[in-house]
Image (cartoon, rainbow, N blue to C red; front, top):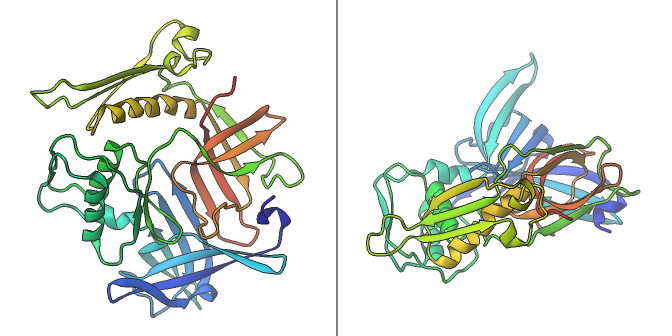
Length: 366
């Protein structure tokens, strides 16, 4: 059981953050001005989270620098729990007048947008032997003193010199470096902190949706299966430009992972469907793990579930899912009981909040 299973009073509050002395700090709560809002999260995008707000016009908002920080609040058992839902840069503040009241329709993006906007004005190079995470932290520090980050430490160093051409964004370079050491792409948590951690094949289950009296999900569920882009053999080739060393190389099949019973394996269909990836890498261990990662992605695209449910979170101080987070989803009528990676979410910021989740299967069960 979680606090969400007991029910209670749901409400939202909205905090305005202002840039002062190189850091974002509390300005005021603008809850009474916010008419409605929605948050959209998509881990397949570079800038993962966006938001839209409809608010009454406020003169003392600086749309170029201020941020809106929504909070989901649940009052239950005489306790109020609060979960931050991100920091949003305010773009396209359209004004509307209904004859009496001026309202703003605001499009917002999470702080990754600042890294996407920050383009390199010269080529950027890193030397062999430099620690990858330290270079990522250097890039984040260059963006501004307001940046907060938590990138998990790593001993991995660059296996060769790496260069990025003029015009590449800091977000592109950071995600490229993260990919070299097999980390998830960068994301921003509910408190506005840039996050980076290693990819893992073990799912992090943050909630279980089970079809009982406290299932927390609505009955209208879509289950889809898509084999169009499936492959059963992965080839990773890297270090191709080095003239004095052999390229790092790895071939991996479903059979290598003990998945010969998978309906798309070579054993099952009698032929290989091969996908080749070329990328930078820091070691053979990385190439081996990257091959496993890309192969297991095919288990994720096999089955997807889309469904509306109540707001849930397993983190005390965060209402936004993290890279790699998963749900366990069970439906006896659909004959489904498995673990799925969270791919997309839409959160409607209103009491009785509905979250529309799109989740993809992480692992097959035979």
